Length: 154
Image 1 (cartoon, rainbow, N blue to C red):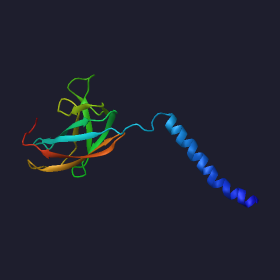
Image 2: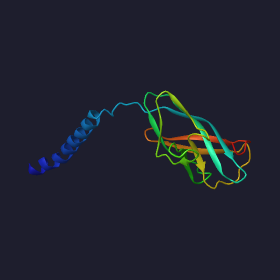
Image 3: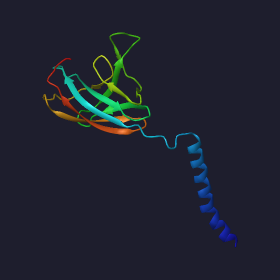
Image 4: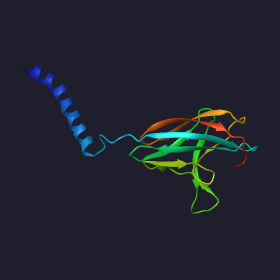
């Protein structure tokens, strides 16, 4: 009889723990929140003759929840990082920790604003397409593609 009670305690205890955790999760208000719907397009890369390059995208959050861009990379181009103008020191850029993309809004990357700096990329031909991963705090990875523009130093 004691053996039977002990054997029953393990699954009953596991179920009670799972129920307690689910109750806590729903009590925080996080359960049932919609995942942000992120769409990335308009990707372009501008590379100067000195091999510096930057990537620019248009990021649309068509969902009802804000999301945050935390990182962007390209498996084909190596190291990259987000860059933004430094408002405290005009004319310089800084590395933002994250970039919020509000619900029902569009973030358009630009040289004068948020962009992705590509560190030591290979020389690319105009029209060449490169894949990118944009990483968001809630949505996770969103794949995108950028094309090397004919423009230089813009």
